[in-house]
Length: 414
Picture (cartoon, rainbow, N blue to C red):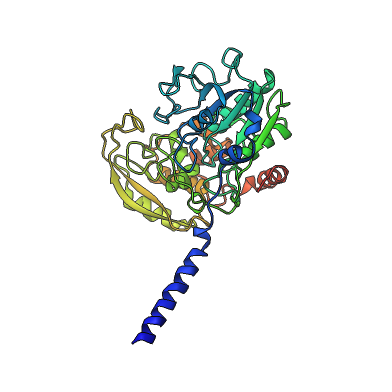
């Protein structure tokens, strides 16, 4: 009996050691903000510092970067807010106003209101701009544009620019979708990169300067890289807590489908705002859900399962103050990723368009100009409207992606 107990104890010990050596339990990633504090605080010594930040600009201990720097004696003179506000509580697309931060007394200048780029008045008392925002890995997520405009202002007004890098939450390897047609530039995309771009914002900042994507491009740029991050990592493999980058980016599952289902913002179909699973729930009143699921399954799209659902978009003061199809009972599909390594979000979104249009040609409305700006090209929208979409619809962009990969390779830090 005693020998048996020893055997069980040994087995338990071996199991524990095996679990502790698992990659999922490996030492967590250190974000650029931590490396700044540990190794590069001298960059801010004696400087007047402006911070472009929001609620995601926290350290793993839960303390905000601004509070931490103030405690370390850094002279912060201004804060700058992207879309959704400094606290991440402003709904998508709503204007962010200039205010005074109640906690610190610092001025907060909006970069998503009357101006998208810091002007000379905002930067009068700033020597160094520090950028620290969590991106989601899709071109049309606006934080990258905020970074670019701020970099341009830094170059114009001779301000040093520091990017504190954070993970691409949907990994840094996978790339998908058209490279932006530069006749379709907007705040949803100002660089020739694919929808799912496969870089961190630090790497993108280096690319912006190296490829001359802004004017002037002579930015005094420093990127503080992460430690421990690998390109293959998804966010839940970093050991970092998930903080919703915006009100509807609730989970990593949301970010995983977002590069494809965000395209439904260009239609009269609900993209799930005002529900518990924005961008995972897609539907509208009268949609033939079971037939739609059957049609989608017939495409054999990789890494995804579709379930027929019903949902009712409800008002949420932060996430959905006025959601599409508010208070209307919608039928549709739940986009459930089963193998994220194989899943193709952009292809999935486009094929969902095709299926819904085929089943409901009179009900389905596509705002093609909006779609063109989101996906970054006109061909996809034209094919959808003509009913000529097939599973190889994105193959025509492969040569673009190969060229992009060559450019991207020059700026990869991990």
